[in-house]
Amino acid sequence: MASPRIKNNYQEVTLIFVRILAYITILLIAGFSAWLTAVVAGASWGLAGAISGAAAGLAGFFLLVCGSLYEVNTFTCRSCDHSDRVLRHIGTYNCYNCGALYYIYDNEIKSIGA
Image 1 (cartoon, rainbow, N blue to C red):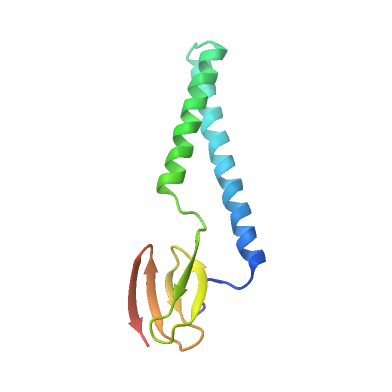
Image 2: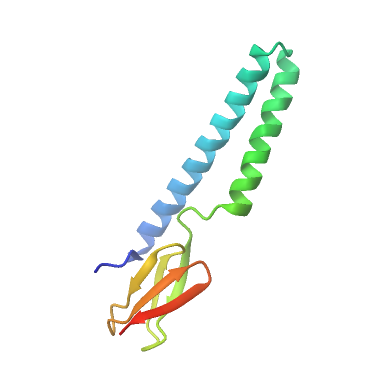
């Protein structure tokens, strides 16, 4: 079973770029949809811009507070003390050094097998 680990710095930089691109896309979609809804509802363009800015700001706030898209953490195997860079919400992790199997989700780490 393969574990989604970060093998080099280029992969981590690519994940950061994809995360930024996803955040920008979500903010633009939230802002434009709020602006279009306000304009169709009859609000002036200035008020519609303020509403869309507030909606995009709220979306951005909740993405930063609640989201963890492609975040990378360092995980140290409890059996052999081998460290790897892995995604934060990977599910299962198979240690490449000793073969121990772990369930990882946020800060919860459970050993499933050896």
